[in-house]
Image (tube, rainbow, N blue to C red):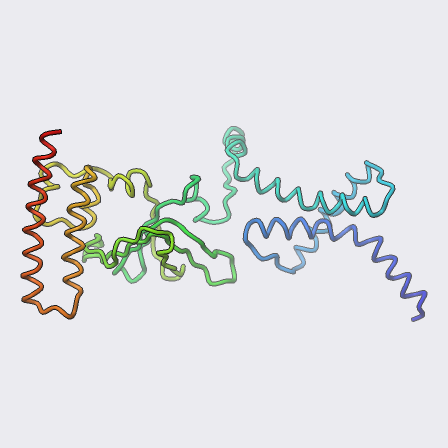
Length: 284
């Protein structure tokens, strides 16, 4: 092969590459915005060629004389189009349009995206396959791409032990209040994911309905019941003392007799604080 033949091949590549690279850039940018890896496969090549042909057909109508300017605008279009497509998918206007046209489809990539419908992260309850624990927390980072080990992370998480009936019985962790408190849960270990209302569940402590006045003053409440106490002050009193006794229970350096004494002492302090709370509540 002579030097002239090589130059002809290079010249042909330079002329025909415009039928591939714009579409490939679009697919790459779109995958990047979706936090996915663009796979090098036959389907990707075909899509890139189709998109590039459409771009070239439209841009040729403008009749750009400079080759440099032509490629500049081609690259700009290749980047802007996937960005606009990503933004449109997140707008309510597109969802409303699909509903109006009675098109039963979803633009979310996976079930976690379907749960994340608000501007703030949703509060999730995750049941583990071993049926012994559940985790609760705000949805954080995740990896859900096919072919990779999938996981989700929960911020400000709480971990509960389940009783024989599958009901949260006791808190296994201290109260995590910052986004630096994170747990990573791998998808193969998850059985069920529930989305809880942030305002009612996390901030107001409502787990479906409030405890009655009689129920909230019971001697013994589990974390689930404590979170259903409507009044913030009373809820915090019950939660504080429950955590105190739980710490005593898991502390292996304390003997059983000493643990019982200290727990009873804490219960007495709790009763006194509840009585003082009742007096304050009556004077409000």
